[in-house]
Length: 108
Image (cartoon, rainbow, N blue to C red; front, side, top):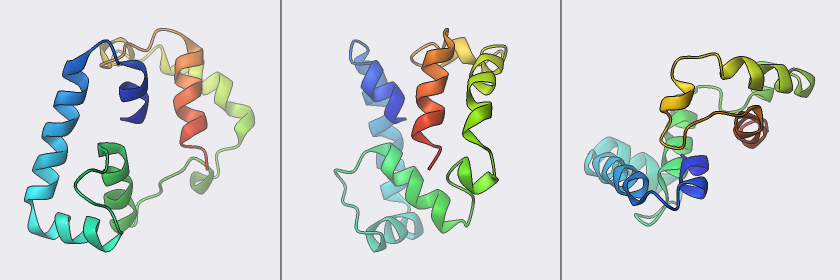
């Protein structure tokens, strides 16, 4: 979410979609109370909301939590581009450097 917002500034529909999802999450009472308990407000971006939800569910949030070492990230970045969905991302993922940026952000 954060990658798409940062690199999709020329695509206002990205922010509009993220805001719509953010509003839906806030409209669910149990989700809203979880988000509020984490100290976030309605101005928090979707990436931060999802981080709270993922943590509340007890799911791993980082690659490091999955025991993935940094040395495999370049290969992972290249392989991710073979996935059918990579170019369909709101900011199309076409180069390993793009995927590497995302993986670096979720490493720790």
